Image 1 (cartoon, rainbow, N blue to C red):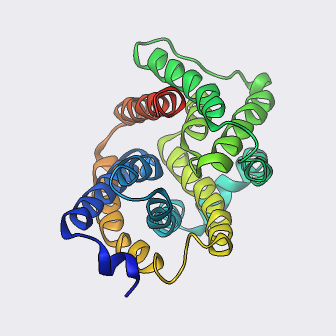
Image 2: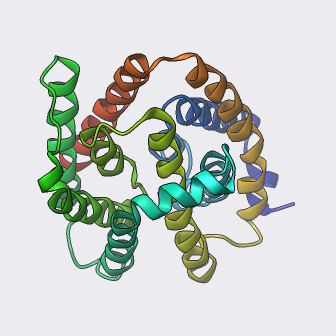
Length: 256
């Protein structure tokens, strides 16, 4: 058993399981926010490197389940329909990760968090923002770049990806499926990177494996709720979580 689990107080372990379950449930309901919830919650009670290590396996495998929930064929169809966005996002993520220490993170959190918060708030109060067909290429580049920058700096791809899909008026299952694909591929890259960086090691991997249990349980319950939501309810739930995510990025920019 890893040193983290051997030395972790029972109260901290219980809190970690509860935070991860909540993250899995929200992700199952709207398709994203597991990393946001886990990093925000676990970083308050654990050292940042251990919080990040705890996140990596649950993020990777819950996204794989989400992407393949309707089968391999639909997943490949979603990838084919949105491959430019995925390619731009992953490419920018790899590039931005190389300069993560040279650029102040608060600036990137603010640049992404403020527009995301304003965008989701406008949508929630009834001011729809949609991308016309002739502007889709520009939206793909813009949102893909934002997703890649945020992913490279913080391992969180969700807010720009969700904003992109909502702006295109994407169908519910397609929205959730593409999120899973995008996040899975990004997390796969990050998983390999953190095996090399040492964040994932013999001491932290058992803790990350244990976090799979509450993450999967929460995801399963969240899927049940998602299946009961009609398209408008799903959209409002998504936008509400997106607003919280944007405000959290602003908080990290200016107050932490």
